[in-house]
Length: 340
Image 1 (cartoon, rainbow, N blue to C red):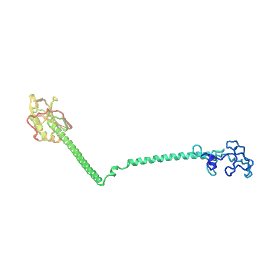
Image 2: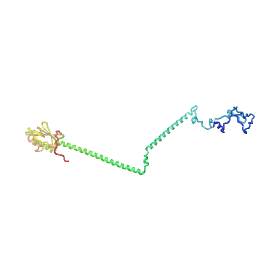
Image 3: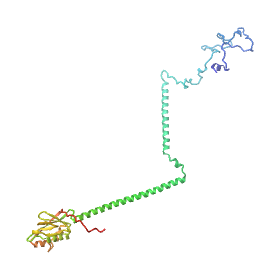
Image 4: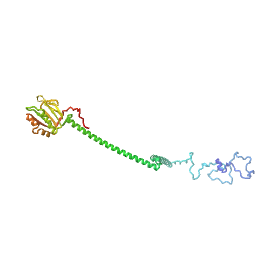
């Protein structure tokens, strides 16, 4: 329906030109100046309509409205309504005046709108993060759907497993203590074996030895120093606690004295020790308590008295550090075995 049809209210456009007075259909127009009905046609050109006496006079300054003209009511704003929307359906913003009073308001609205969008985006991101975190830290859904009896059984299994692990821990700790104790015992046994081996090596003459002791020098007199006098001196020193001994001759030859060492008289006053010939004077270097060993040799009728009775002399020299460096070849046992 067009605007013309809407304006008449009848659905039909109002014809342009003078309105034919109403009357019975088919009767001629009684007016003297009425046109011929045959000549009256909507398509015929019509002159300007003459105002009748019944019509009110137009107000000054107001243009008369042609009854047959078509008025576009859509362009007329209704009173109290905002301005018509533009082509995009939004109301046209008010134009800024010459003093620019409307421009700050529009800019402020634009800024507040952008800030609101940013706040909404941040809130949405925060909500998404919270949802993801809740889903991540939530409990296992399978446990939530498990029956109470199953939960009790799972708890009992966990307790049993904990008890087994505690027992394993205690067993490992006991093993650690045993290993540490065994290690300490093995180390102590090794230290004791090493000490005993050193002692036996010194007694067997296979290891050198140092310590406080004496040097005993035998000088021959009218008679040479016999092997019996030297053997008596070695026996007296052993009885006084001598731990290591060696004998040397005037030619600097030295022999280690052990339990199996023997002494023989040689030619021309020499001395045979372990099959090795030594010439006088003879010097015995012994490790032990110096005072005790000196006393043992000076007993009445002892070694010193016997040598001096033969015209010889015995000289003592105490040493804070006496060194017995001569070694004896280890004896290979053929028959003796340790008792296990």
